[in-house]
Length: 102
Image 1 (cartoon, one colour):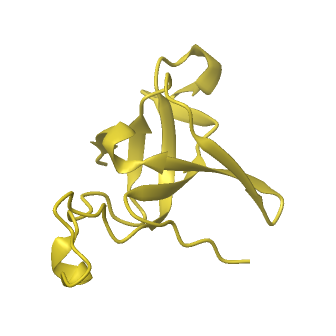
Image 2 (cartoon, helix red, strand yellow):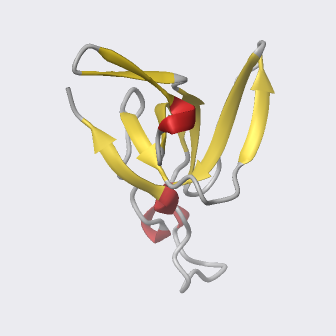
C-alpha cells in the first residue's frame, strides 16, 4: 500500500529513540516528537482559489522534503496510519517546528 498525503500534510515515520552524544534518549523523555519524512503533499491551497484558477500556481510550496528528519509539535492532534505493520503519522507541515541536520 502506498500513502500519498494531500494538501500540506506530511507522512512521518516516528523515530523511537535518538542518539545524542553517544547516549540513547528514549522518546518518552523528549519534549518533542522526532520522525523521518516519508511523503509530502502538494501544498495547501491558496484562500483566493477560484474555479477557473490554475491549481498548480495556487498552492503554497512545501518546505519539508522526503528523507529529512524533523521535530514536530507533540501537543497537536495527528492521524495515526498503520501501513505494512508500521505506525505512521500524518502531520500538517505547519506543525513541523524544525529540521534535523547531520
